[in-house]
Image 1 (cartoon, rainbow, N blue to C red):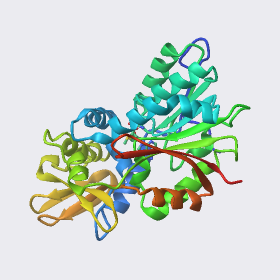
Image 2 (image 1 turned 180 degrees about the horizontal axis):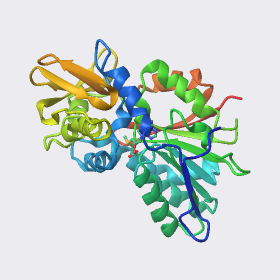
Image 3 (image 1 turned 45 degrees about the vertical axis):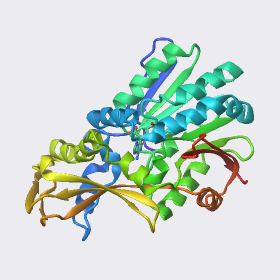
Length: 338
Ligand SMILES: C[S@@+](CC[C@H](N)C(=O)[O-])C[C@H]1O[C@@H](n2cnc3c(N)ncnc32)[C@H](O)[C@@H]1O
């Protein structure tokens, strides 16, 4: 196990510890992903590189957009059922993967606090500023809460999640982020997550967006105000800044469509004309043909059966599935089969 690049206790009373596993220069494996992704026959980049500080702010704005229903739908499920989740799990700890601002998580933390079990919160996110901010805000708002923050990549750094104590834990993976994995990688990832859980004691709380009218889905990823388009282009700004590239983000059009066969949304960036891009830090020259597309995200949508099958393939048994009143989004509880 690698030691953290930095381990900082930011509260004098010891309630906050933040460990960072992203070393400068090794940031989120950006260089490898760009080298690999931009030299493929069909260019693609993984979505985690959207989220520098600006990208995280843009995502926050997306969550407020009229077209972007997932955040509101997931929040409404939590508001309706958090007390029941607290009761069903008896959890003293929440480990949250891709925690972001932890806005919705507050609803669950409040329910655990009301049940008298809340003790520790472990946010895991690639955006350091987010982890630090939510550690400060949550310890201020929830008296006695301990925060063990992990600045890292949930695909590479799960082994650094602290061991569970005696109390039951919830591992939360909200926002439908699980949909960003392709189906095979998704099951592999769920198997790794399952290792953080003790059979019959701990639970995975998983947020999944549901298959629905393609027009509703496509609008959610292509809003009228153009915030999602800005978020999409942000990955090019990240590459310009971190790797000295000369992408012209404005020369790329935002594309979002629902692939009806695979039942996932794809976001792409389409070159508006022929372009040549230099990425000096990688010694890489990349050509784009006019209208060539670069895939930047997939977001898989689920049916209850797909969810059940994926969880079963990862050794997890679905114990509860909760949906919002409009049936747009699902939150499920599952536990390792042993
Ligand atoms: C779609 S947002 C969801 C945020 C929040 N959980 C919610 O439900 O609103 C995805 C979050 O996961 C983080 N993230 C994306 N890929 C990650 C990775 N590989 N490792 C750790 N965090 C990641 C991003 O920084 C961002 O905060």
